[in-house]
Length: 567
Image 1 (tube, rainbow, N blue to C red):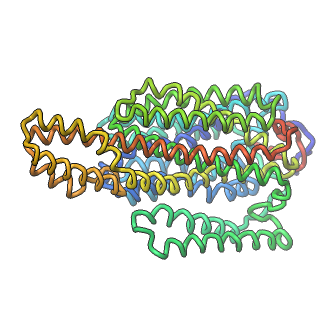
Image 2: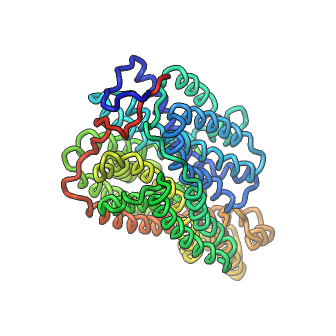
Image 3: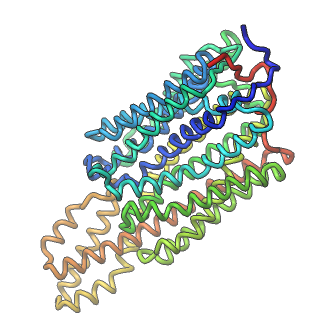
């Protein structure tokens, strides 16, 4: 017998332990989106991976997550949230072990796909479990805490990843960034099995298998050519695949409408988009993660491939972004959003954009000489804006739809986040490396006078200096044109073979400075791309109703809410 839907969930003395479990699960998911970025050079060197494979190691997780997320929510409705949560957590833990034990890029990419898919089963259950576990007066505090932790997890991933790679625990180099999930996952599984309540929807929908296949196909047909196109010089099939993605998405929309009229239980409830504020807000949310997903990737490349910093230095520098994100998330959820509504999101986007602008100016102003302490303020500003957008957005956008549709809307917002991140990684790879190639002479022009003086100081004749500088220019230009920034072109090898030890040292140091100047300028240009995306995000949030406040569906128990069915 189903419980009375108007009955309030009884107070559970173990509710905060259950909350700690789902908080850890959500944190592990968001952590794994970015923790790989800081370990990219180590993974690439250890597994001898091509840069396109590295892009897939980063993007595979979020792609699989986005593809499975809505389906995972449906499975929780049908078979029980606790059961699907435990399956997802167990699979996530095993996939993390497989990532850490991978022996080649293909194995790691496959393990990352599985890891993301298992997260797609696990994460959709979190808000529903919080709903069932907490009484009305505590639920808002739990949601705010969960949002605040989520707002800083991405940056913490960069910091923790840097530390784990630098420490080289047990001579495992990059592998502990995945293996750390194993003991955490085992402990979470035991705690969840003991203290978590089971729940499911009293009117469980049926699984939309055809819709799921069409959705996955549309995503993969778009992202695969974006990831592979530049490496292969954009063959015709890449454009054919992107056109096929648009066609597949159109078929998906048509099928979902048909299913809603006939069988019912579509994968995506398209009636949500009748709310213009929700539709525009969802588009803004997707754009936000396209901009920020790309930022995390190029930020790490700038610090490590450009400036030559160690993973630990890059990771510890990223702490300041996490500090800003924590401040922005905490203040926006608890103080600002309840009072100012959608204006918090607009201000957050503007603050984030200002942080990008300041960061880009400092990068080009100081170039190779930029220090970690000079990044502190722009990172705190960027993080604060990020937190002000991320933490309250789901609550604010859910406030635009009826309570009975809150679950479906939440699934769409989570899917938008993961899909936006995957697209951001793919798109910014095109923007960043194309710009690096086109503007590569800048670094040579910057260091050439100093190189010429140093060559004269070590006794190189003037005619030989001209030849050495010409070879040096060819080396830097060829290196900037590489898809993989760690590849050493033939022109650089030939120049090194003809150089004496003294000249070779001069050119090596000059090459590092020129590379840093090129990366700094390209990083700044790419941040302007991010600023443009954030401007569109702010315009989208501006379309939300002025009266938009924090979402309060969580505190209303109605027939569509998850119902406890026993432990």
